[in-house]
Image (cartoon, rainbow, N blue to C red; front, side):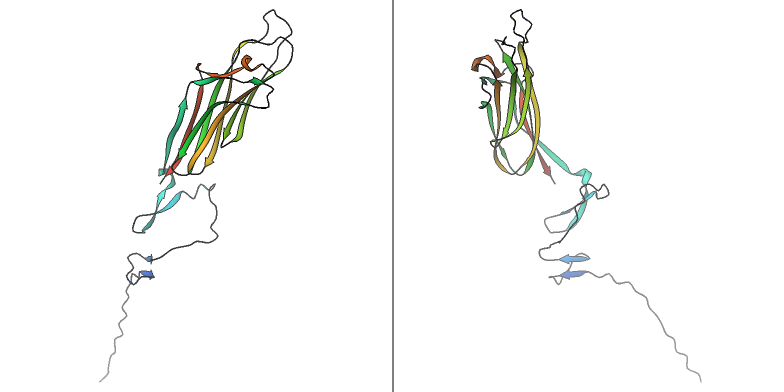
Length: 216
């Protein structure tokens, strides 16, 4: 009598979950502890990298599309009337037009815009060059100097420029959380103090700042 032996092969797929510092993993890889990635690559300019890793309160890590992230814009101040400030002098010491203190709840990108009117009530007639300059200072450091040059003819026939001029500028800076000072300063060379006035409640007068926070 012949013996027939059957060999049965059974194939099965096993779903394994790996836990690090835990005996009860709940995802394919479950790490119970701090993580560190060394020597990552900056892909800021690579359009193919369009996903951002995020986690919930339980530490579950997934991604969201970068285009869905929100950026919160907050107006820090918006001034349309500035003190009329005598800014004439030798041009070496600017007069303070307006000082604004801002408080950032967290790091932000801040954009400051200004449009400052400049009045010349008594135009010179000596044929010499004049400089009209408005400074923007952030935390005491001048970061923008908006300037105009003014020329005149040595005549009293009314051919010299007079009236209202504007210095304008925009500045963007990344600032840490906390309190910061943003200041407008003005100087006019070479005028008597009251013969060059910067600021006032005139049309197109603007001194404003916005903070851009990443909210994700």
